Length: 154
Image 1 (cartoon, rainbow, N blue to C red):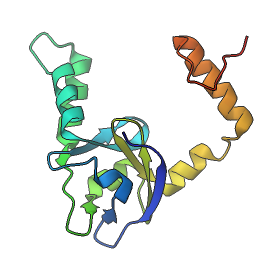
Image 2 (image 1 turned 180 degrees about the horizontal axis):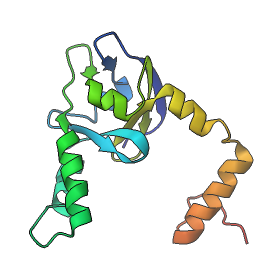
Image 3 (image 1 turned 45 degrees about the horizontal axis):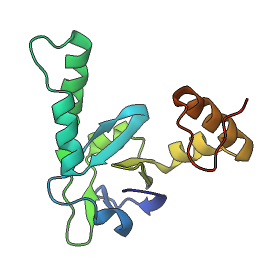
């Protein structure tokens, strides 16, 4: 399971060190591809395989689903780490995720998101205790599956 967030510097060639806490869960066969909201997503082989099973394109697939599948597969690359635990983020991927000099790796359970540090900072600037509580209550009230230690508002 991937947890936490980590900030790292991108070198001049577009390489960035994957946090050691995440490397153990990203064996050969892991895949990096576009994710929602301008993120890159690294999925271990089993997560990528589950995604493939869920979204296999057929002649009966609706047009919108086919477009999404094409975009996802077109953006996918092997997530290969070099001997120093770095991954090469190509120019297309850096542009997608707003990555310049620094990135933020975010553990999201079964996969890892990567986004430019400036975007991460802007998105989280207003996240305080009150904002988190309100967001938590809205999101988990929909599912009624409230995490331990959280209580939905009445």
